[in-house]
Image (cartoon, rainbow, N blue to C red):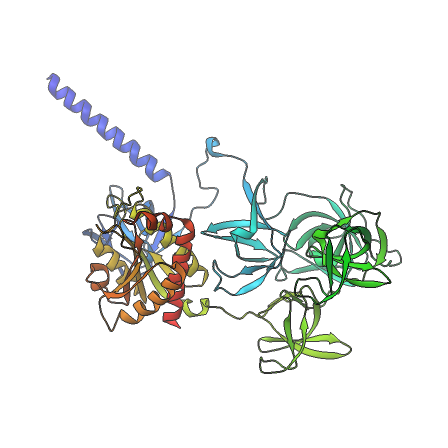
Length: 600
């Protein structure tokens, strides 16, 4: 009798515990999925190798119980669950009001800002030098941090999202209470310098126009984002481009009324300075490529007329004027006013590279009429294909390529695609070798192959994703995935390229270099050839060449597939190299370049 009571008690305990566990698990999310194929297999586990336990039809909706990589566990009935492929369903996220709250996890939201520390830092469409330049993130400018991938940082700047090299920026963490997309609240008074300045509902030329401000209207700046400022007057609030306002005070001020007084000429300031270098070259423009027109000696007193990118335009001697490196001049005197020409609110181009060619016609075959200097702006008269027709002064017009400049006030700027055009919309599978209980090779210093294949794969993924490719990882965390499942993923996705990443090991401790393997000479060899050339260029390790390899993931693959050995963990010196983030970034760039060349 006692034994029976104990048995019943244990069973009740197990049932209660199971019931509680299921309740917690299902109540943690109310996400749902809708089946988007005619008939979808429901499996006993998160992978194609698991048995089919049911089939569901197109249009049916199920609650989500759990997610694992690209697989979703759904609730079939009150006591039945199963796994479906995430890429064959449509997910419907719960609304914010449906989510459970917990005071233990509530904290002040935080964001980070990115500050440029380089003059003319190129702002690119993706994390790599092969991506097209979409602008310049100049020295001292601030942007919002979005994410990091290897040696590249994604930022939101001047109404655009793009990537800059991390070695030329500083990332500062800041805390904000509600809006992470803008800088902390500031209050500065400013004056409109344009004849008529558009006010928009967002910090971008694509933002809807909600009004305009007249020249010399006084405003209060309360927020800043990249090259945009959120301004307030008694009659209007919204975003304006910072190029068309002049800050007049940094101390807090009340919101002013729009002025109706007689327009006044805006002023800039000059200052005096002293040369600190033994002999300082004076040039005809503010860069090291400028022609040397004179020299000034240490102790010479000069008047600083203008500052641009750490270069000073100075007046010296008998009314002589030129440019000098600002870091060799110490400012000293009280500022004196000087006239400044107000900016125009017209559509303009801004030169972002010193020596940009301005041509007589809309192609590179036309003659060069002048070479524009960094920072110069020109009014846009019209467009011709991928070229802007601009006013170069004295009632003369010329053309500049739309992909080598920045635009101001242009809603749909011209862009010329870089290497990303070749992989856009291509379906590519990146397969980080090993995972979970399968660590792969282990280096003499303890480096695990499974870890560095994954970190390298994620860098490749980011580059391809930025380029618009349909890219998928066979695993995105430290999980064991069978060889059959890796190949099945490629088949399900109808991949146009499958890249398996590995690191080598052998008893010969001196072995080194990268190797590219293929199985089918017709299907795989063209991809392997392009991949090997670009990988060797970037990785800069010994080239072990393109070889035949009888590996399951490439042998059983229906689409073009290669397996890459990205260096030897068994080589103590090479292990140090390939375990570094710098090498993995280079290898990822080589893989990306290889794919662009293959699809090109």
